[in-house]
Image 1 (cartoon, rainbow, N blue to C red):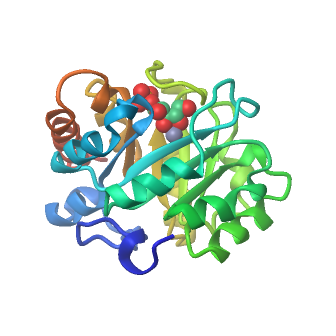
Image 2 (image 1 turned 90 degrees about the horizontal axis):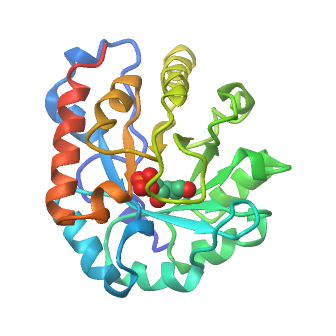
Image 3 (image 1 turned 120 degrees about the vertical axis):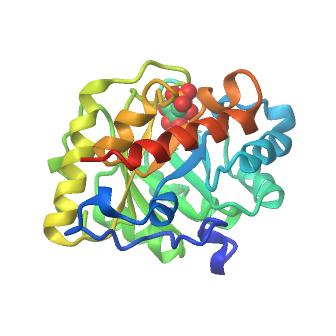
Length: 259
Ligand code: DX5
Ligand code: ZN
């Protein structure tokens, strides 16, 4: 990783916000809500021949994190990129690089991604035989550590690590491909995570990934998601700047309606 503030977004929000659990979110200052909700465009749907430019457009539209999908053809039935692309991206943007590892045996590659410039690294619960150890490994490289659950994996499987993670990523599609349809049955997991965090005073943030677009963004935000990954909706068609801006606006207005 690049060190210092590179892990954080360029806005003024700290990477791990102390969510005022006891407070009704509808009564929060709108400025605070703006900082609680962040957009993390997934470059999976971007034009890889013009990656820097595409990320720049999304950033101009308000994106504050870059989501990088790493697939190995084993854990998921698709193959994407490795550390060299992360290294190039690191030079192309100031935003934190959120590396979502959809790979078997992530321990083997965590150091490589951290050295390439990853700021956030998330690993799948389903891929880790020794999840506690793997999360410590991520932290030992001074990256924020996230844990990811597939649609078929219950929140309860995370009960022993929620006190040590910086973020939890709820997959709202089965991982492997961009442009899939959102699975509404995953919404209760975002709600449950928000409840657990409030009950136990944990500090993790809630991220959602898969099928997020203008038609689904409001419901995930109302369910408690704060970091919104979107690939197709940002880079699929039209202008990435306008797409990012519209998504963020919809998300922030939905956050004001959270109950
Ligand atoms: C899916 C990836 C996602 C994907 C999301 O396995 O983890 O990050 O890029 O793409 P959309 O937003 O198109 O569903
Ligand atoms: Zn992802």
